[in-house]
Image: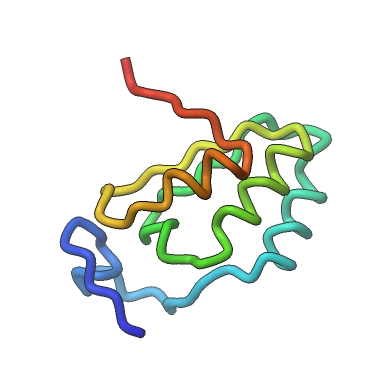
Length: 94
């Protein structure tokens, strides 16, 4: 499926980098590499993280590894319930 989210640089086709979704196994490997010194995983650069159907699994893995997860979204996809169930606390900007 090709996504074209209006507020996303990838969907708007202004980003020329290779496109794709991170596999949970790759994400888990990355978390395992950084969890001893990192505090936060930020998911919001150059693409809509909620497009990935495995986002809740990835958030749950990072949170259970002791990392705080921040997900930036344009809000066009509603996956809030799955993310909350995965352990992502709701955090509102001040």
